Image (cartoon, rainbow, N blue to C red; front, side, top):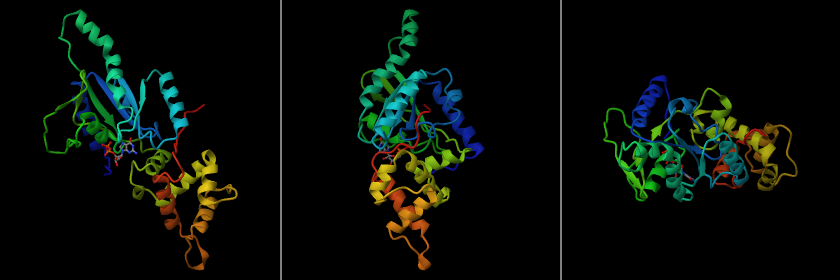
Length: 283
Ligand code: GDP
């Protein structure tokens, strides 16, 4: 589902998250490992101010492992703890509990020293833009299929805690944040990875953008998949070439770009070109 964000929705999402933040000790910020910056909310630092945060690079199974390694270093160097996950299979999620405990240790030790509270579980909230895998992760952590949905307007639902392991509790509804959409390139990255519907953008433009990126970073895989001897300089010429190779022609010999775009996007999503990341940290 793609949410269309308007200023009113953003204000409401922010209010709801602010309320939830009062209940928790640590924020799990979920992003797409293939585009860890483009899939972040632009105001995340401000919104979560003061709360310890663990960054979760999800969908790592689809990301380029070399790029993911670079991203882990990048965020750790910035002082942001990070874990690499596949929420679909659960790979990596067994490390979450220990990391969360580590992040609140100082606060809990202080409380203990002051005799303020009895030992209790660490409470956490999952935050992220739509489609990064929040519900999938909550279901995984819950260990069974509970119905997890975002807050629906007009329906007040009691917050529930999901027990994870022995010392972690997770709010059963995630905080849904808006993506950065003021930047055209970010929109294109979100569309390529399926975080927003490509129909919201020009379908062929999304593919043209992807080809421009792949040409620079994964040229060998493009050559192999589409049987190209070499890669044309211009992304549009590359688009033409792939279209021709795949027989996407209209009468008069013109390239049927829509059809070619559909084939390429399907290939990318089905990992026919392997595991791809669409962002790298600046060196
Ligand atoms: P939410 O909107 O953030 O709650 O996202 P969902 O949990 O609904 O996930 C969006 C889509 O991504 C679904 O089709 C999931 O099956 C898929 N997904 C979630 N996590 C992963 C993952 O780690 N790997 C892969 N390959 N797909 C995932």
